[in-house]
Length: 323
Image (cartoon, rainbow, N blue to C red; front, side, top):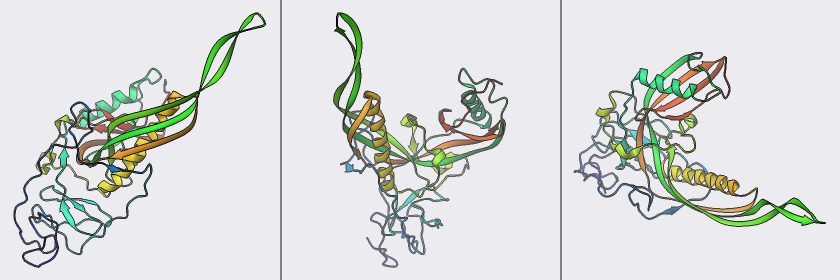
């Protein structure tokens, strides 16, 4: 569509022109089911799939127009170079930058509420540090550093994987030779298939490697709500520079790694594997994340706590510490 004030080309359904700021009309809120993995309990269906290669080069940052205004409230946006997802500081709406430079409000934008305070977050981190038979009072003997809470954007990308692999498995059996029983090991050929579906989490900020959840961690999204900046309590809301297309590529790569790991657990010698991951349109969720730095015996480490559940997203801790 075109702006009725300056005539510039803008995204269909825009409320305000992102070039001159003139009001255009009203955008109806997105309706319909939320994305998820098909046939998984409690997860809605999603649109037609997009095949994703096992690994994909990072997408080039989209160009930014000279003047940019929020399509939701008309407020001025000041994104840094390379930003793909701009959070409006006035209304909290996320503006997605297309490769062509066009901008539009991303409708599937949600959040989780922060349920921790500084003390409860530190307690959750301390319990995690002390967990384990060979860790005694690690938290008590560590020096706490920076503790920061911010809302970090994550892409939740529904992913389906089908993988076929071949290998050999060592099988022991008893045989009789020259009247005596002995045990021998044979290599038995294995040809099998792996199928799984999951919601793959991809941190939407480039360089935030520590914020990428550890393998097996899943955010509890049942309590998610439409994003409302007023509910953040003034906590910093992070913008992102990873587009949805790039997140799909990363989700496919993560799924490929997981399929290969599962295949290796089923054989003693993996000879070949063919992985076909498929990613679907996802959603953007801002998660309250507590970042803690601490030092143990002079070594700097970190812990990330999910502010909505108190669970550890990722972190470092000594493998052995008895004194």
